Length: 146
Length: 146
DNA sequence: GACAGTCTACGACAGTCGTAGTAGAGTCAG
DNA sequence: CTGACTCTACTACGACTGTCGTAGACTGTC
Image 1 (cartoon, chains in turn blue, orange, brown, cyan):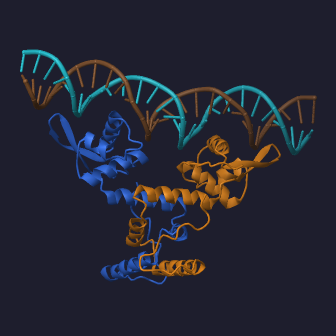
Image 2 (cartoon, helix red, strand yellow):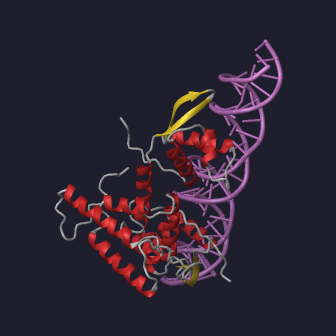
Image 3 (cartoon, helix red, strand yellow):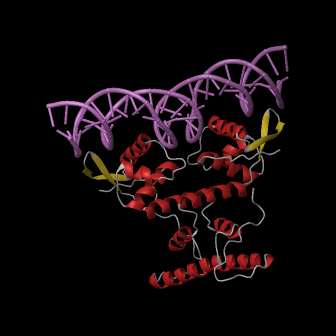
C-alpha cells in the first residue's frame, strides 16, 4: 500500500499547500485568492502547481462543483514540516543546537517558549517510559530512510 | 562595498561548503575526498559546483599550488545557517514554536539543551536591561541586522 | 625536451521549477 | 438554444540543478 514517498515540496508548492491547509479544501480559484496579494501569480500558474502537487500525491481531487474541481491536501501540514525540519537538521550535522542557538540569538525564542518546551519534554518522558539515559539523544535518524 | 547578496545555496552546494568549512581551505580534489564515500560524485561534478560557488561569491581562489587552485569559503557557516533557518521559519509563519515542538517530539532536544538555552537568554536579557514584562519578546533589534 | 598525470575551462544534457498562454469543454442566465 | 464565462488540459520556456565528458594547459620526472 501506501508506498514510501519522500514527497518533496518546493518553496512555492509549500505556499500553495499552506493556503490549502488553511481552507481545508478548495478550488484553484480559492487557493489563488488566499495567496498574499503582493506576488500573487496568475491563475494558470497556481493551476499548474496544483497539478504538480497532484502528481506528487500531495493533494487530491475531492469532488467537482460546477465545472471546477475541489482539492484537498493529502500531505498533512505536520508531516511536511517534519520533513523540512529534518532536512534542515541534516544540513548541519543532525544537531539541534546550532538551530536553537540561532533562534535564541535572534530573539525568536522567549523564555516562556522554553518553559513550555520543558513541560512538553517532561510529559513525554512520562508518556514514553523510554529510559532516558543521561546522554540519550542519538536515536534520531532511524527509519525514514527513503 | 560588499553588496546585499542573498546568496542562495542548493543542497549540494551546501554539502560542498560544509566540506570546505571543515578543512578551512583546499583544492577540488580535497573537497571531493571529504564527501561521504557513498554518493560521492565525479571529480568534475565537484569542480562544476565549486565553479558555480565561485560565481555566487560563496568561495574564492586563495592561491595556486602546483597547477591546482586552493579555494576558501567566503560565506561563513554561520551566515549560511542563518539564512536556512530564516527561510524555514518563514515557511511556517515566522514562529519558532512549531519548530521547537517538532524537535522536542522527535527527541532531538534534551532538557539539558533547554537549560543551556535558558542560560543564554538570561544572559542576553542581562545585556539589554529592559525590564522583562510578562509579554516581552520584541527585543530583536540587536546588532547583526544586515 | 618528451611523457604521463593532474587540473582547469567549457560544453552538454536531462530533470525540476516558476511562470504563463491557448484551445476547447462545461455551465448558467436568458 | 446561445452567448458569455469559467475551468481544465496541455504546451512552452527560460533559469537552475545535478551530473559528467572532453580538450587542452601545466607540472614534474627522466
